[in-house]
Length: 341
Ligand SMILES: *[C@@H]1O[C@H](CO)[C@@H](O)[C@H](O)[C@H]1NC(C)=O
Image (cartoon, rainbow, N blue to C red; front, top):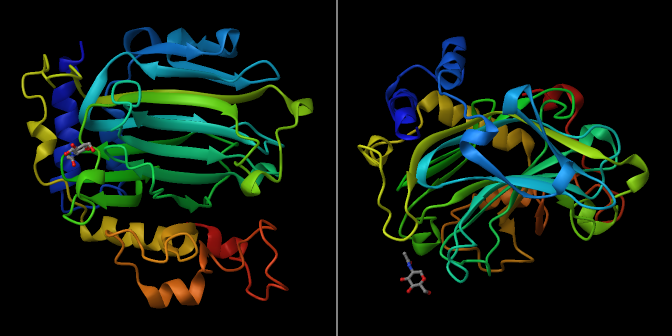
């Protein structure tokens, strides 16, 4: 079953890597990702927790997970994957959602307790429906002492409609994308070294109460008056090969080779990513001088940009949102027009 996914995954990734056209700009490109088969829930996933707070709709093509006073909910892929394309279309709970965390991520913490790898999309609820934040993070080989968080605001309301969140991962590169716009790239360099995820991981989707930290550092708690909070998932895509977590063996014909070569971004994709990061990145660990007086080794951050636009705490100036009072803040927020991608 899973091996039959592989030719189309290969096609996508080769297109991604090789096409001189911008994958992210052309409408035709949407057809490429859409041509990847989606697995129904029974085919590819299993419920982790939450009893009745996980609901299957449309023959298992859509999954609702919800948070109420009793519990959150979550599901996971049945298999572990070493590299591939992982994606879901997600619609977040609307209205008041402070403290609510929706996570779409990969991890192998259950297999490798001390040396786990992890790749995260985390959605951090906020006091008003339009202010959901997205955070990405990466851990490799148990590097939990160093958080490599980045946070972004979005150029759309993620509670109004489904948007596609994707992770592409091969042996040398990881790319996070939203609606085919690359937002973060992690390259395996000598500097990041062993902190680059390199062992098979499971794909997860969860919703939980993150009152202690999610919204403005825990200032706003989950208010169960507004429960249940429902996160909707569909178009669940796994373009990769299931592997045995111990010896990395696989039933696929070519376990990893298709994406092991040259996964690079075109100049256009690079430009889109740069533009996204300039406009929408609201926290960057490489700029967080309070937390990392000596930045982690892979940070070759532009210190001029850091000092012009970001505080010592790595938060974009004018974007502290009451998390911390820094006197009267004269820096203007990004205007609504600017915020459109
Ligand atoms: C991962 O960590 C373990 C234990 O700290 C170490 O022995 C191993 O060499 C590391 N692997 C990589 C790829 O750095």
